[in-house]
Length: 241
Image 1 (spheres, rainbow, N blue to C red):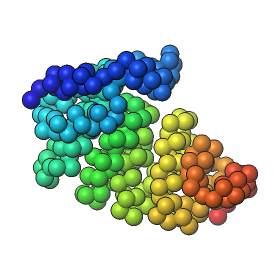
Image 2 (spheres, rainbow, N blue to C red; image 1 turned 135 degrees about the horizontal axis):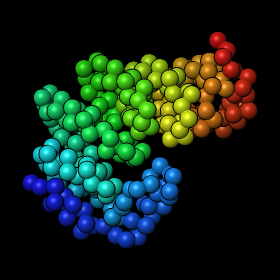
Image 3 (cartoon, helix red, strand yellow; image 1 turned 180 degrees about the vertical axis):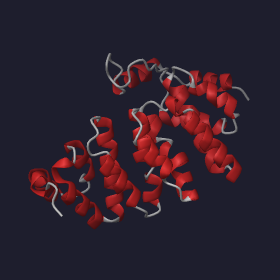
Image 4 (tube, rainbow, N blue to C red; image 1 turned 90 degrees about the vertical axis):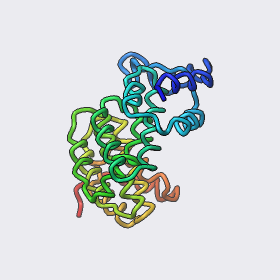
């Protein structure tokens, strides 16, 4: 099984209309986060079908997909890694995680992070009760690695373990990147679904330190009248506990 078989399968379901739409959606203009990326035009459902078809692709061939400039090649490669991780024994899971960390520079867009971070690295951290890899990534200069760090905590949230999400979110409050603000708010929102009281305490504690985008995402599921109160009074809670 070769990576060329995967790229051929993707090309068969690619459309120019989808390529144009994706290029617009992923901010590929000069100076934007997606600059330099390339799209062939394959929907996510179609990529998932291809990934399942090639779920046993050797890691050496997955690496070739990850090295591609084509976004869908990298995305499908990560979907294959997720399939391998889910279906693997302990040895296979470790091999996939080690491979993932070694090639993390190719996980370089928000959808690539979000489809792989918690399902591979996050799950492994939960499995091994070892969260340090997520904290280490949050300290990286690379924006996408920091996003892997916070999104990876989703695996803990799903198990009802919320402390790592709040601790890492606190470390990211001063981050300058809007895509980190969104990811942090998303994880806070998911944590709040498990324990709303803890989320509200976090929001009250950090007040104006919370980027407005993060706050908006975090309170997205609050009743409308309550959202308005939080947005109007966010400065009231600065450094208060």
